[in-house]
Image 1 (cartoon, rainbow, N blue to C red):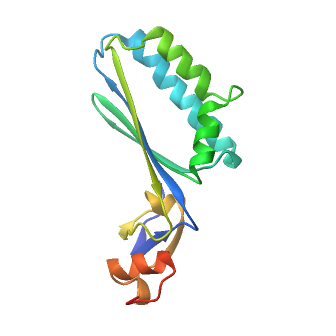
Image 2 (cartoon, rainbow, N blue to C red):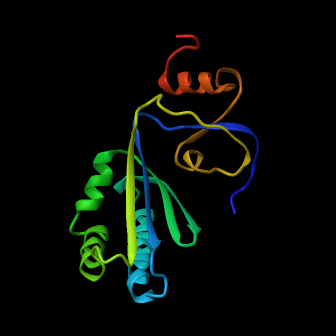
Length: 165
């Protein structure tokens, strides 16, 4: 477990980045042979991405809430995310083909993703008495004091604009 940071901090990521939400839903959980391969493929992808930071994944967090499995990921860029998704040499594309062959649109397992292109200065966050979490695990933590005390100030700080501009 990560150490708790016992003060107010905020996270910043240099430049633009991508917030990628992806998940699966066990529509027919008794069909273990349908969803376990998809789940294990995701585990393999996460291991691959952790071992190869040059692929562009900055941080990921998995949440389990039956019947859903949900991942929040921060990527360096959309180009990194797309290159990973399309590469024939990496884990994603073969897993995608296998899922479509085994499950397709039969309703046994639902999958989804949402992609958000975040522009520099287009976000704000604060954490208090938390370990590095969310964007805080993907970016650089700064004390949420002075020019980063309030939400509007944090947005302006990430956009590189002086307060009140």
